Length: 318
Image (cartoon, rainbow, N blue to C red; front, side, top):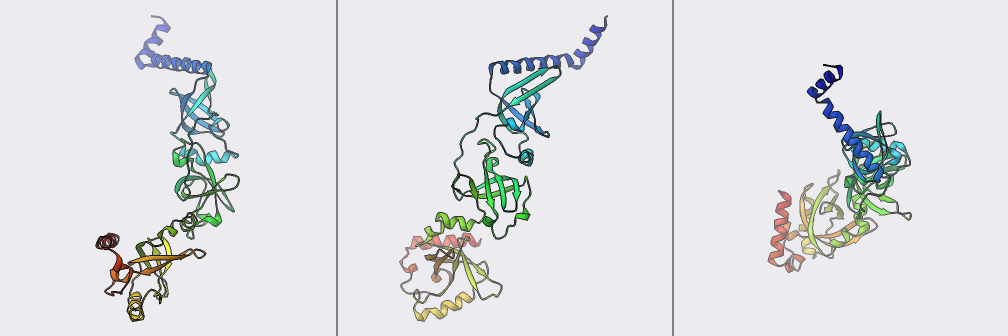
C-alpha cells in the first residue's frame, strides 16, 4: 500500500476528502457567479478593522465598509452599529475570488432596498451612530431590520424630553425616538418631546368638544392641581364661573380640593391655550361626584354614552 492510498484512507475515514470536494464545488460555483455577474445573498458574521467577515455559499468571505450597500462618512459609524448587523443578510456580487489560498471579496455597493414611508409623530427604534455637543445622530434603518437600508436623522438636544439628557446616551445604544419632520434639505429630524410633536400635528386639538378622562396631578404644595387629559395633555382644572351657576361652585370647589393625586376624573374639552400647550376643560362632576348640575353636558348625553363613560372609568381604575 503506497503513501497516497494511506492518506486517502484517513481522509475518507474522517470525511476530509468530502469536505475538500465540497469546498471545491462551492468555489467553482462562486467563480461562475462572478463570471455571470450574478447577485447572491451573503450573511454578516463578524467585524474587522475596515469591513465585515461574511459568509457566502457557506464559505467565509469579506466585504469592506466602503462596499457595503450604504455609505457613512465616518468609519466609526459602522463600528457603532456592527453588533446589531451580525446575522443580517444582504445582496452582493463577487468582486474577487482566489483559490490558493482561498480569499473571497464581496461587493454590496448597489441598490437593493425598498422604500420606507415615515409618519410624523410615530415612534421608531434606532441606533446612535454619533454623539455631539448639540445632539445625537440616529440610524432608524435598524427599525426596519435594515430592509430599507440606512436612514440617519438628528435628535437635537433641544428636542429631548424634560427627563432626558445627552449624557444619558452612548454610541451604539438602542433608542426609541419620534419622527418630527424633515428639514429644508430633506434631513430627518427627531423629537423626543411627545407633547410637543402631538401639538404640532394637531392631536390634542382634535379632543375639543369631546368628553374624555383625565389624571389628577397634585403638585408638591398639595394645593395646586393640574390634569393630564388622556394621561398625556396638560389641562387646568378650574371652577369656571361661566360653566357653573353660583349655587354649585362651593360644592364643586370642595370636591376639587378632595381629589387625590393620580385619581381619574371625567371632563369635556372646551378649548385650548396653544402657546402654553394646555387644554381647557370642564369637569363632569355628575359622573365623579354626587353633585348634579342643571343643564350641564351630562344632562344631554344619552344613556348609552353615559354607560360607555362609566365603563371607561372603571377600566382605567382597575
